[in-house]
Each structure stands twice: as C-alpha cells, then as structure tokens.
Image 1 (cartoon, rainbow, N blue to C red):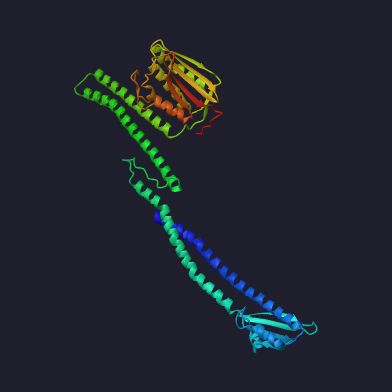
Image 2: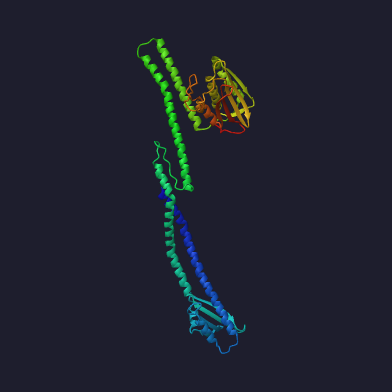
Length: 446
C-alpha cells in the first residue's frame, strides 16, 4: 500500500517536472543564445558608428587603412573581425585583406553591422563583421549541459522525493501493521502516533478514537447479548420443565390443559421479550422515521383510559393535568409506548390508594411531560441504573423484562429528547420527558 502510494506520487511529480524542465531548458537556450547575438550586434553597430565618425573628421597623419587595421585587430567582440568601407559597390578600404570575400560568402555565422558616413551625395558605407563562433559554441555548451543536467537533476529529485515520501508515509505503514493485529477478540490495541500534531498523527488519533467507540459498542453488545441470553434462559427453562413434567406420566385432559396454559403464558413472555429486544435495537440503530403532529393532552387522556382498568385493580388513581396547546411531533406508536412504559413503571412503585399524575407543559420551545407517583420511590442505589437493560430494582414488583425504561429512553433519544427519573421530595418519584416542539425540529418523512 505504502509503495504504491509512493510510486503514484513520484510518477505524478515527475510527470509535472519533466515537461516543465524541458520547456525551461529550451527557453533558457533560446534566451541565452539570442542575448549573446544581440549583444554582438550592438557592439558591431557601435564600432561601425565609431569608424564612420572617424572617417568624417579631417584626416591628418592617420590614414583610413590605419583606422581599419586598428579596429580589425581588436578582439573585444571576438577573433576574425573584418572592417570594410565602400562607396556604392566599390570597396575603397578593407581590413584585413580579403574581408570583402568573407562578407560576400553569406556565412550564417557571420554577424555584421553597417553605417553610412560622409556627405549625402556621395556617402560611404562602413561594415563591421565578426564570426559568431563564440556565441554558437557557448549556446552548444549550454544545450549539452542542460541535456545532461536535466535528467541528472530529475533523478536526484526523484531520489530525494522517494526518501522524503518514505519517511512521511512510514507512520502509515506502521499503523497498517498495528491494525492487522487488531481483531474482535482483543480491541485494546491502539495505533501509536509518531507525531500527533501532523496530518498522519491526527488521522491516527481519529482512528484510535474510532477504535474506542468500536470497543465500547462491542462491549455493550456482548453485555447486551449476555443479558438477553440470561433473561431468555429462565422462561425457556420454566417452559421446558413444565412440558417435561406434563409428559412424565399419563394425565387427565384438565391437567394437560393446565400445562398447555402455563406453556402458553411462558411463550407469551418470550414473545414479549423478543419484541422488546427488536424494538430496542430498532430505536438505537436509527432515529424516528415518521412525522406526525401529536397533541400531548389527547395522548395522555387516551393512555389514562387504557390503563384505568389496571390502575383500578391496584387501587391507584390516574389524573391528567395537561395544557391542551402542547404538541410534539414524531412517531405516534413510539411516543405512546414511551409514556405507557412510564405509567407502567409508576404503577409498579405505587401502593394501593396512591395517585399517578400526568402533567404536560411547554417551556422554551420544548414539551415537558411529567409522570409523577406517590409511591415508595426508587432506592438511591437503583437510581443510576434504572435505564440499564434488564435491570429491575429490588423494590420493583410485578412481572417485567427490565427493558421498559430502556425502551422509553431510546424513544426519547430517537426524537431528539431526554428522559430522567428522580425521587420526588414529597414522596414517590417522577419521570420528566423533554421533547422538541414541532417548530424546533422537523423529522424526516417516512
């Protein structure tokens, strides 16, 4: 993995550097060669202008041949300089001898400049020329140097990049090796961060945090599985024992009917437990998916009517004190179950002659629903664990799987709310549910 990344990065960099280097080399050769030739042309023009100025002056002891010989002998613009003076097409002076033949040869390496001198009616043309051999040779040397230097430079650059990328990607290779050692059996291993402040270090830190969350989820799943297996073991054992006892000997039809009735009750408990487990998994895996407005007062009155018979059997009164304008939005079956579970929990903790009050108010764009009872309250050591799966406090009476409050909290979280249970100072306990009002939260459509 690391090598392939290094190769791809190196090829990408060289694919950019190679054409850029070649283009820069060609441009450098062109600019360098043209600059030398341009400087040579300027120098020739200056000398031709100087000779023309000298020829315009009155001649004393210095003859035209002396001036031309002196100029031709100078090597500032290179060796082989030629100077020619002609009137029209007639050569009247040249240095060195045979300069006119050299200029007439049309050699592409010869650079020349011409300037007119003398009177307009009979002007002289001064021509100064020199072979551009030095400029050509310098351009060739520069070209050869670039032909050799560009590949060497690219090779050294590639080697340096390979080494630098190897050092930069080494932490990733180390992290990959460490991750290979992580499996479901042991999630305690963490990837070491060589430099926590750089990009790789921050990625490794994020990976370790993800591993922490995965480890926590796996631990919770294992705990959940163990609890579910424990809870399922008891009703299954009772069901099996009852059936085995019924089959040990011949019995009357009434006895068989009684055994089947008990088996049916145990099966119903198993079915309810499985349904609760599936509901809990559904709620914790995704948020509520329906979006319907619900009047809280109507919902609480319907729940009170539904639980009234059970409450009357226990000698407990149900009272609804809800603001009719309070609304919430979400999945109606889930919200009904949320408050139904809270009412059921209150019935478990309220003695005969007690009272359960359901209040609903709106505060700061949130619906606040309180289910309060006048029962015995919850033991202080049980309060921190009331929302744990399968947890049933010592003061709890009646049947139950211990998932009711866990499901209630999962429903509240799925709707963007919270639920809390605390003992009431006047006796009993109260469950407080806080959910966003429709104006504050729009659930996704089903």
